[in-house]
Amino acid sequence: MASHRAAGRQGYVYGTAARDMAAERERTRERRVVQYRQNMSHTVRRNQEKALQMDLPYVIMLTLAAVCALYICVGYLHVQSSMTAKIHNIEGLEQQLEQLRSENDALQTRINTDMDLDHIYKVATEELGMVYANRNQVLLYDKTESEYVRQYEDIPKH
Image 1 (cartoon, rainbow, N blue to C red):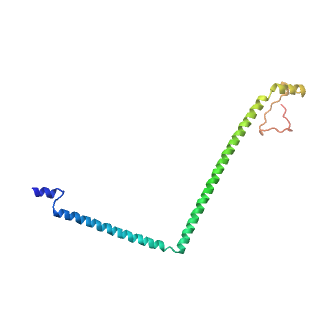
Image 2 (image 1 turned 90 degrees about the vertical axis):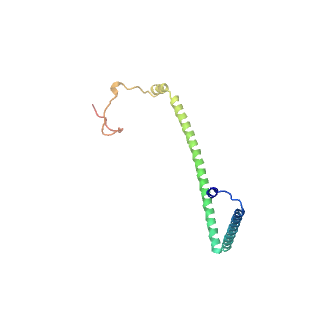
Image 3 (image 1 turned 30 degrees about the horizontal axis):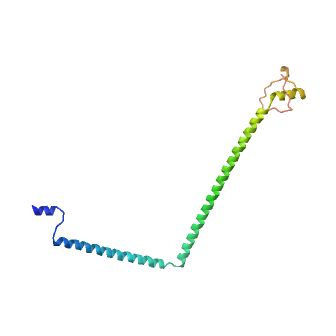
């Protein structure tokens, strides 16, 4: 039964065989680390060789790509600053329009309040000799041909 428990249970086995397995695992791990470092150093050397192999057309192409990217960035910044300036200009014009509308409304109110109908009647009747029309002097007629009246057209008789 004791052997069954030892086989069924995964645990530590004390003795010389267990120490050898641990040492073997350590050596295997060290070999993997050394092999990984060798592979990495090989990859690094290969990349360094590729970097040293940059020839003139490759350098010219990279330079042109960098110049194009710089040109596009500068153009973008120019357009953005232009748009910002135009937005500020529009805001200024909107404020100016609002101020003019406010002044216009104030002037219209002043005109409407300054208009004295009694004074107008007094000037019209006393200075200009105008009089109100009598009932028999006012003629009303319907004209259905057009919506306006021509000044020198004959007035129809009733």
